[in-house]
Length: 132
Image 1 (cartoon, helix red, strand yellow):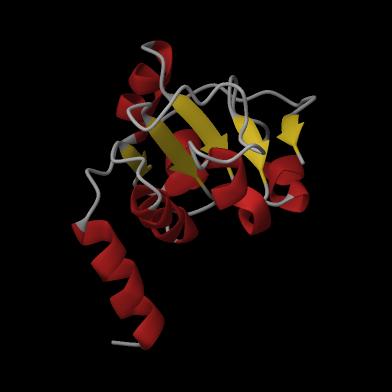
Image 2 (cartoon, rainbow, N blue to C red):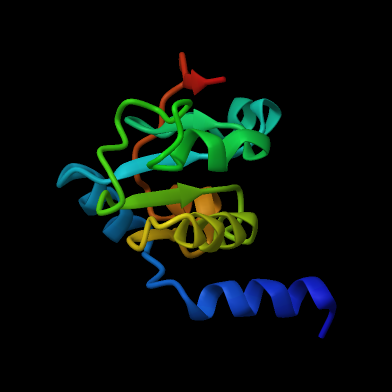
């Protein structure tokens, strides 16, 4: 097993990962959906309705409950946050990082947006809700 595979496995030990349908249900009850895919990936796969797009390079700053740069939708450390990426690998690392910041309900989607699409869940062609 490679070092990065071990890192992902360790991250996932901390998470209660969601299926795409569970992620959609979480969003419908108030969870913040965060899409970390690149613009090129979103162009090919489509946008996830209701998701905020936050580049992975600034994710922690935008979702740290104590950060003055956080997105206004984040109400505090108890807010459920569901991270999506293309296949569900980098989102596991991101969700574990968010848990380290105190977002104990942060998690990700098993299989990422590819699984979301395979499940027939909704997408749209934009515009995306991109946060800088």
